[in-house]
Length: 311
Ligand code: UDP
Ligand code: MG
Image 1 (cartoon, protein in one colour):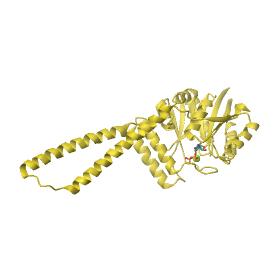
Image 2: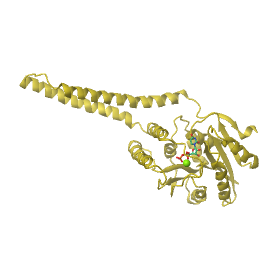
Image 3: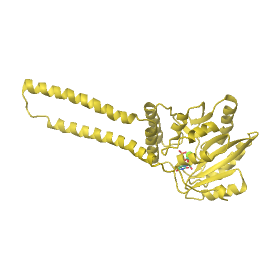
Image 4: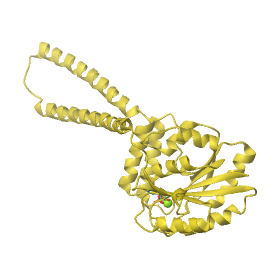
């Protein structure tokens, strides 16, 4: 019998998990001859999440769990789940039911009958999200698609169903700075996109502040593009050319018209401007250097405190 592993990253989701489990149990009845396993990854929750999961485990052997020693972030949680998954198919879902389990059947059929290797989802609306957040999200996707060769789909969720082969390809990338949407695009394979309307979370609240999202966006850009580094060189070349032009102009001016001392205000402006450009470029290099620094350290992506195997 074939098996689907459902990976759920959970951070303070005590209220959502039981609802999620119920919904999944209902949905799994539509599948014939398919076994399920649920892998709940507790990403250092501060509430009763772990106990809620353990209680499910005591009632249902399909439920497995991995509990981290602290909060490592959703990317780390998804990675841990993928590593632990034993199924022939693997799906990644949020605990808050924003990734509707009822789409799973359609996704599964696309892999089974239409020959796709993975099925990804994107929400076509951002209803119920703060306007400013949607605006920056759209800008981010425009920008990242300009500077990288890998396609990043606007509104793409982490909710996907994939074959074991695709999963193995994704976990073969053990980088520390993980940006799943890029990783999934990087591995290739035949991917079908399914669209759906945005769904509000069932309980609890979002864990992504604007600042956290901003840092994640930078991560996405530095992880999948080196264009900002090239930008520094391009600006360098541009300013060299401009300064060459100015030097020639000044020489001609001095020779032909003499040399009155003037133009201090414009000089100060130019100096400040160039200082700014230099600092910006240094900052860009610093970003890449810091990411490289973290990769080179080769620290584990997550640390497990306990799993169901110890019980
Ligand atoms: N999550 C996680 N670790 C974190 C933050 C979030 O595992 O550090 C999980 C969270 O429990 C949820 C999913 O990631 O299942 C998506 O988070 P959330 O719903 O807060 O994000 P949003 O849907 O608002 O983008
Ligand atoms: Mg959510």
